[in-house]
Image (cartoon, rainbow, N blue to C red; front, side, top):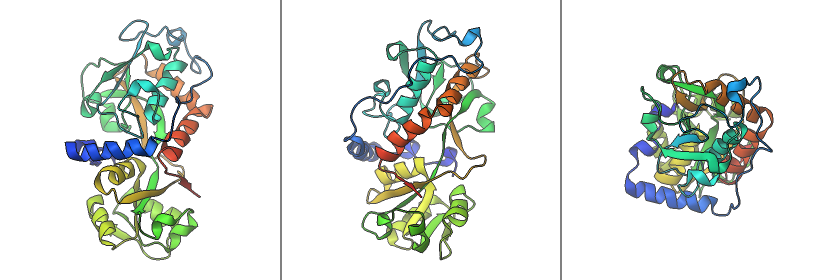
Length: 299
């Protein structure tokens, strides 16, 4: 499933969001303290003088302006406060900023509506972070850093079901599964889970959700960001059973958005690549998207 069609915030009513926000805040309430930060500012691999830490040609000299939408919701952010360093994307943004030589007090957050972030036109941010998938069509209007998050697939089931108690990949083999036709999710069901019975296939995830609620399937598979949304806002009686490890290949990735042909792109990409290489991104993903959000990796 691609983010362009994901029904997340774009179709959420205020009442739905209120429910969603309350649930997601509850889900992360047990987590305290600030997100882990890289050890020290380090120039990006292959950095030139233009990437010197804290010396970039930014929107506001001496500051790094980062955009994201409002509300900024969990598990990507926490307490609707991107500046606090809590939540996966807040932590990633501050880690990138630190790699570029900008401390927390030198980061300026700016509200940028989701669709505006990758629309054509000059930007007022240095980069934007908001679960935006890298795509060829979007690259016509903006530039992207390398991917900071590889979108995983996840399994959701009703909390009261037997499927909700599964803790291993092998445990899914006896579960009646469903997924959207032609999706990466269905590929994962067939190629990774390999269930003992043929999975149910649906034209849309909306139909899969209905089948789950009606008991026609015991669990459905979809991408993790959509799973967060569904279990928090649309089917709160369901839970994320777990997420599945990526199996390689050119999958969907979230990237930092920059102005088209921005001179900062190579510097930001260098910072993201360095954070991936030193394990920081994996650590942040584990902390905020697996443990805090209670979405364990099924093995």
